[in-house]
Length: 212
Picture (cartoon, rainbow, N blue to C red):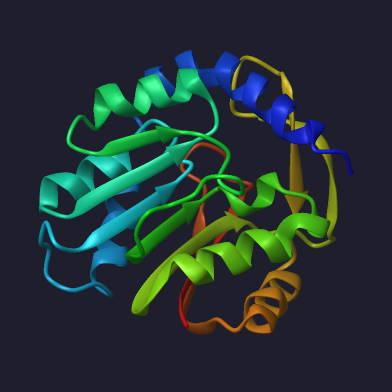
C-alpha cells in the first residue's frame, strides 16, 4: 500500500481534533483506568523515568502520567491533535511527526500505544512493532490496546462514534492474529484483558501489556 494512508490519516485526525477536544471530560474516567493499570507495571513515578505516549489523542493519558511525576513524551502525526493534547497536557513534550520516520533521542521505560497500531497496514506492522521494541528499555513495558474483531481486514473506515464521518485507514485485528504478531516480534505478553468500549458498547478492546 502507498504511504498515502499516512497523509489521509493525518488529514482525518486534523478534522476530528475538535471532537476529541469535546470528549476530554467524558473520556477521563476510562483514561484514568488505563493509566492506573499501566503504572501498576512501572517503577515509582520519577522525572528520571521516560514514558512515550504514541498517538496521545486528547492528551488525557499524557496529562495523567506527567501529573504523577513521569517524564512524558508523546508523538502525534496531526498538528491539530497535537494542539489539543498539548493544551491538555502542558507538562508533557508533544512532538508532531510520523512515528516511523521520527528519530528519537532516548529510550523509554514505558510506552503507551492506545488505539495506534491499527492505523497501519499489515505490511507495515512489523516495522511499527520492531521500532517500539527498539525504543523500549530492557526492563520496560508496553501497553497495546485495539479493538477485537472476529475477522481480520483492513481498509478505509469512519469512526462511528464521531459526528464527522471522515474515513481513515485502519486494520481490524483478531485476538489470535495480534497475539501471534506480538510474540513473533519477540515481545513477552505479561498481561491480557478485555474491556467494553466507553462510547460504543458493541466494541471490545483488547489490552496487551508486554515486555522484551
